[in-house]
Amino acid sequence: MSSPMIRKLNALLKTERMGKVLHYFEEVDSTNNVLFDLAGKGASEGTVVIADAQTGGKGRLGRKWVSPGGHNLYISVLLRPDRAASESALLTLLASIAVYECLKKTGIQAPSIKWPNDITIERRKVSGILTEMEPVGERAEFIVLGIGVNVNMSRALMNREMGEFARQATSVSENLGREVDRAKFTADLLLELEKWYGIMNSRGKSEILKEWTKRWGGKNDRVRVSIEGRESYEAVAEGIDTEGFLEVRKEDGEIERVISGDVTIIS
Ligand code: BT5
Image 1 (cartoon, rainbow, N blue to C red):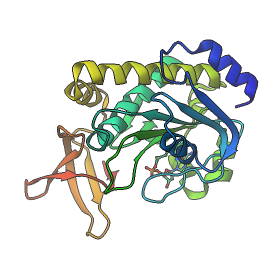
Image 2 (tube, protein in one colour):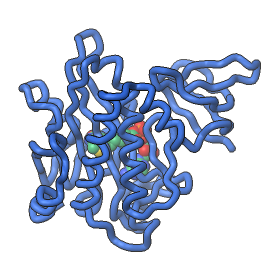
Image 3 (spheres, protein in one colour):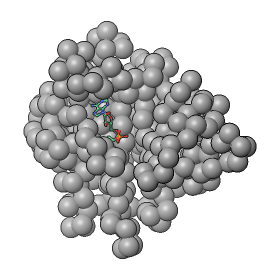
C-alpha cells in the first residue's frame, strides 16, 4: 500500500480508536512482530501496523503467510482487553466476524467462516487471522490481532507464490472480477473491528459467540481433526463452547473440545 493510499485511509477512517495511531511500512518481517515490540513499549489500544509486504508473514503453528507486496492487506491491531489471556480465542472469532462483514460490504455475497481462523469464499481461503499474546507463563497484557487478506492478488500471482496450496486460496478481486480499493477495504475493516470489540465489551462474550455461530458455515460438517502428537480422527462439527473452542462429536458419540489443531472439512 503506497503512502498516498495510507493518506486516503486516514481520510476514510471513521473509527474512534482503531487505527488512529497507524504505523505503515513498505516491508517488514511480520506486522505482528513489529506491533508486539511497540506494545511492549506501551503503545495504546487500537494502535495499528500495516505493511505492503512481509518477508516473514506468519501463520499458526510456525506456518507461513504468503505476503507479496502491491496487492493485499497485512494488518495488526493492538488490543488491551481486561483478561487478555482468556480472551484470545474469542478475539479470533471476533476478528472473523469483522472480516466476514467487511467482505459482504465489499460485494462478496457468501463468504464463510471456518473455525478457528479462516475466512473462505467457496471453500478457498481469502483471509487468515493470527492472534498472539505474551509468552505463556507471564500475564498477558495485550493481544496482537494479525489479519491477512488477499485483496487484489491475481490468480497468476497466487499460482506463482503459493505453489501447491494456490488451489485452496482465492482473493477478493478474483471473486468480484474487479480490483478493490485497499484503503476503503481497510477503513471498513477497522470500523467493523471497533464495532464488534465494542459489542463484546458492552454486551459480553456470549453475543460474539452467538453472532459468530450465525455466520459459521460448518455445523454438521464431517471433519478430520489433527492435533499434534495424536492420531487424527474423523468427527462431526457441532458448535463452539463458551470460550470459543470447537466441539466435535466423535464416532462413539462423545463430544470433544478442540483447543488447537487443524480441522479439515471432509464433506
Ligand atoms: C493463518 O494461519 O491463516 C494466519 C494468517 C495471519 C496472517 C497475518 S498478515 C498480518 C499478520 N502478520 C503476520 O505475520 N501474520 C498476520 P494458518 O491457519 O496457520 O494458515 C496458514 C496456511 O494458509 C499456510 O500453511 C498455507 O496453506 C495457507 N496460506 C498461506 N498464505 C496464504 C495466503 N496469502 N492466502 C491463502 N492461504 C494462504
